[in-house]
Image 1: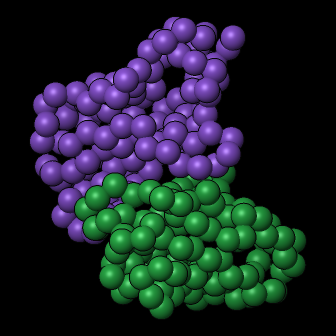
Image 2 (image 1 turned 135 degrees about the vertical axis):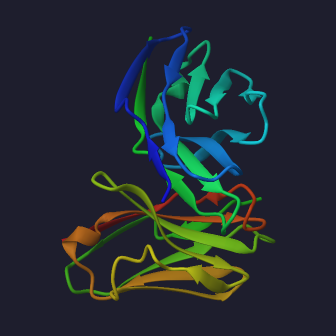
Length: 115
Length: 113
């Protein structure tokens, strides 16, 4: 079974600074997707960024980028120029392409942004 | 697009009562997922449907939980009888196909007293 681990329960960053959230996963599959979801206090789960395992290039979405290290099974999220609205829970998630579309989530990291 | 719609947003009930959570997926999506979020266990997949058919219900905790999808635009998650340990936020998500991005609803916060 796949597992996703987020080792940082909480992180704090100063507004306008950069922060990196860590995620590691365990799988025997070679074809899969990785995701970062944001959950603000409103509870809504919002997809931040996705990465296909077969792509070597790291995904980027505006201020959000990932560092995908397939051999190390590591998938960290970098948030540049942090904004107050980035404060939320961030979940790393894994999905295999072999069976269904089931997401396996990490335990989450609470990000606090200081003004 | 209205997104995934869940009702109610909040539900408070007493132990032993029946609880029904509802979900309307995004129009045109044919995969639907029910998740439960608790502090202790995080986000867990309970069950998912593809073309209205339950594909994997291995995450359903016990027989007190049941889910149905009578048509492409509606699904229910029922707990009967409810217990305090069922208190959680329940999310519904849908996707265009089983391999596409999942869009989440706002969740239902269930409190069982």
